[in-house]
Structures are given as structure tokens and as C-alpha cells.
Length: 200
Image (tube, rainbow, N blue to C red):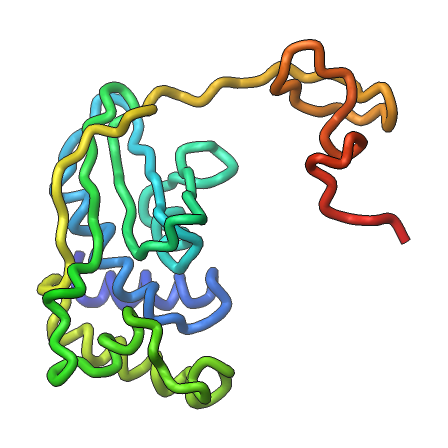
């Protein structure tokens, strides 16, 4: 990807993400590296993101793996700035992550604070301090780029296309829902197990 293409993609990602998050700039180089190392695939690329972060938006835009098409899975509890791209046919993949041992806190202090989650309280609050921090991170990253990005080949354990559950009509609310357990007659919202709202 040329510098101009990368800059254009970054602006597109800023608009999609609705803020100028520095993780987007870092994520572009990470996804670009993963695609290079993975090489051609037999079927479709799928992705597993190891946390809910900017990387999710970069993966969706650069690979076409989304929640909606079920080519993207996010493991929220891990909370790592890392992901794996893999071939859905055989599970062959590349895991890409930030090697924190390669971050020099003297050369790139704002990146060091970003990945250790030790930015100042003012930055954590948002506003101009957060915007300034983001610009510093992106400036520092432009000088070191892939030096702090690491990767290795993996085999994804569950790589097949996810099951498509049958649908049924809930006997209580009469809405269509996916039956994930045999003999299920009432949806998770009506049983309370998946209810996320209350009517007002």
C-alpha cells in the first residue's frame, strides 16, 4: 500500500470509527502485515480479534470480515491488541500482535503509555488532551511502524463456518428467534437470560 493509499484509508477509518483513534493507524500496518504473511487462501479469510478495540473496525474495513457476515469473531474477555487472520477451509492463520518488549519508552513514550494504559487522567477524560495524545502516538508510530509488530503462524481450532441455527416463533412474545438448544420454545429475552432492555 502506498503512503497516499494508507493516508486515504486512515481518513476513511477515522470517519467510520467517528474519532481519530491512534489504534486505527497502528491497526492498518498490523492487518497489512497479516495479509502479506497469510498469502492466498483457498476459501475466505476469517478473523478473530482478541478484544473490543479499534482493530475491529480496521479488520472490517480492510478484510471484509464483519459481525454481519460472521467472518469476524471478537473475544472480549481477552482484551489484547491482537488478532488472527485465517483461511476458513483449513484453519491456517497468522496471529499479529504488539510486542511490548520492543517498545522503547524513551524513543516512543506516548506509545509506551498507550499500550501500558498509563496515559494521564486528562487524556483518559478525553477532549483536547486525548486528541493531542493520539497525534503523538501516530507521529511516534510513523517512525517505528512494524518494528513493534510481531507475528507467528497458527492453526485456528474451530475454523469451520459457524452453525446456522433454525428459527422458531417464541410462544410468549411471538417474535422469531434462533433456537440454540433443542426443544427451546421461548426466546432468551422472554426467559430473561438474554434480556438487555426494559419497556418504558
